[in-house]
Length: 78
Picture 1 (tube, rainbow, N blue to C red):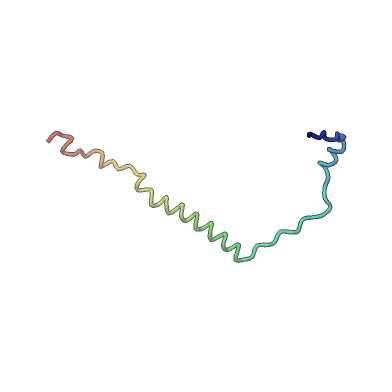
Picture 2 (cartoon, one colour; picture 1 turned 180 degrees about the vertical axis):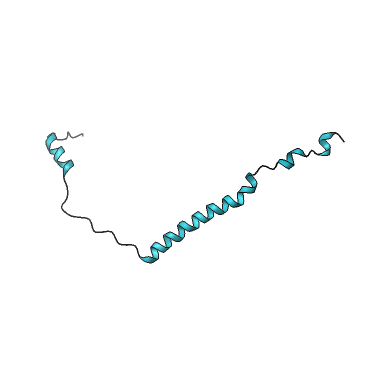
């Protein structure tokens, strides 16, 4: 039912970890000018979107001190 594994000498395992192949992987393909331009355009669009959302959202983050000093007539009991 269950097989016992053969014992392997430790030296063999240590040599297997250090094994290096003499076959080099193929060189990476160079990106074309269109691919580079596309990456730059995507990055620029993301940065512009973040900056635009910050500019549009700044008025909502600003505290308006004039609105807090005014009280409605209902709160004065009139």
